[in-house]
Length: 488
Image 1 (cartoon, rainbow, N blue to C red):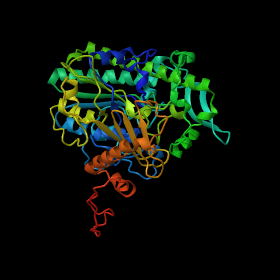
Image 2: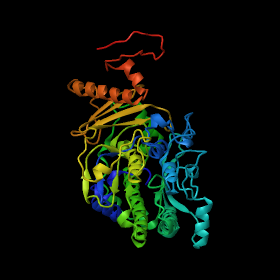
Image 3: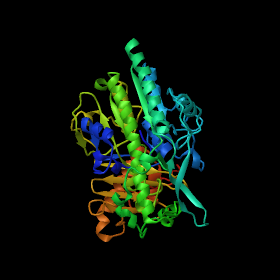
Image 4: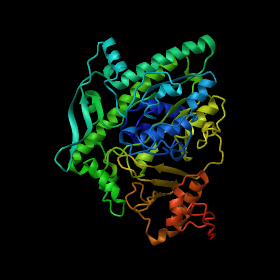
């Protein structure tokens, strides 16, 4: 699992310049999902959804600890999680790398083996990482050539990238892969001695910004070869004003276009560094004789703007750049080289893990096993997908419905959005108010309302009051005192 990873950085997803042979090979030998979405484009709630098999509104861990404005910071006691279920049924369970699915409750709390690595970025002062550097005689973290925007007060903006003065072997990514291989060897010994099965997760902190990488990755791609996203021409006309505010937060307009090209080039280099480290783990699997009977998953928690729509990071805008992500699954014995276009979610990994382990998938209530799709079957599947957002740098509630052609985003405090992804794949033109979109707008609004109400996502309550969704059939005030209902 990676963090903040754009789908268009991989060769398997059509990037002709990408250097991602390991992940491309995983796609060639497994199943690549072309419509794989995150339930929400923010680290902690997305990771908590993977942990629980529940949508964010249900598990209620809705924001990252670092910018939390009053939401929960840990899952409640007694919450179902898949690693605890696996351990109860005799599994070794390990997690190497980024946790970020709670504050007080760390990965070990839920039964994961591995070093405690909290936070949102590479914790380069972590004692286990420092011990690794000392053990191997490697130099400490040091950077130069920092890339930042300029804030309105003239001060430096957020760090976006920097040159790392360490050899590859000293990078946090190499360290994580090394620790994962060590645990893979340990779990293999347990498997050989007593048949103990295992689940092992390797969660890289990258390619999340800031993109801090050694010379050979910082300069690996020529910025002149980078084709800028068409959505860099974003004007924010007809869009929720918060998007312009978010662009200002990242000081995008204070940087020359050449800097944006360089940032994208460094980002691609970061992806290559991670691909190489995944390759080391895959080679260890081969060496240990695990490849033929071990399922392998690759995905991330959400995407990254990298200048798209004149923004960086992720935030209060439900564009494909941050919601559609890579998703590749290889299950031994399943057909190789499949490409599926069903709408699936990171959430669906939870039920898939449980089914592969022969366990009950029912507790993962918002998750559906991908095993039938990876096995080449043609099950009935939803023709759309719902995603949600609750806030990051500032709280804002959004819900999204995406189907084959259109995307609806409901912003109760602002401007709603509707995009025709067939005519406008870059989501530059909000057609929500166009008269000829009335039929699409109304049918999608009703569909979103029905799905949210069926799930129990109380966001639907605001839709009742603001939009003609009809068929209320309940006390709109949720007070229990009002018996006036309306049936259209």
